Amino acid sequence: MFQPTYPIHTTRLVLRPITLDDLDDVYAWQSRPDVVRWMLGVGPRTREQSLSSVAAMAREDALNAVGDCLTLAVTTDAGVIGTVELVWRSETDRTAELGYVFHPDHGGRGLATEAASALLDWGFGEFGLHRVYARCHGGNEASARMMARLGMRREAHHVESYLFGGEWADQLTFAVLAREWRARATAPDS
Image: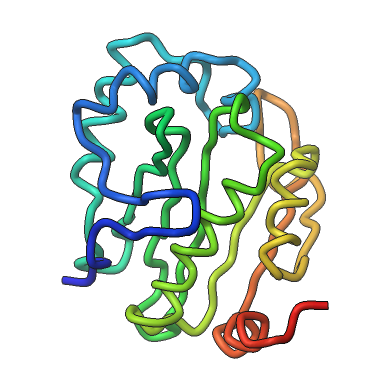
């Protein structure tokens, strides 16, 4: 079993496993059309659907086997403002996929980047990943910008590669290697 030592502290955030007590905070963004608009097959959730989602995320506190997801609540004094996750995609290739969702009321201050960076630090450090990638809808400019801020390079623009809301959609794929992540972390500030 692989899991971070909880909680993970950053300058402004605390990352920890989701609990059922987080339902109100999670429902506050899962019920918003502007948050779920880029999620495949997901519409604004009812409170009951958010409860099911929170219960599932509460079980995602460690990586035991390929395919497992590690989902962490991102918290401030305001409560849970979002989640970050790593999905273990390959043991042989030491690869995982990064995901994140944040309440828009907390955007524009670098909190999502700070949280994702902390999870990537753990993934490339203690967990020993070689490569992490992330994907987004071709129209999700905010997500693409965040991946670039994390130092991920755009590796692919898949044209009309999947059905999204009944229409063909483009998908962007970004990635970063462990050596690139370590070099970025040790580079002097410009």
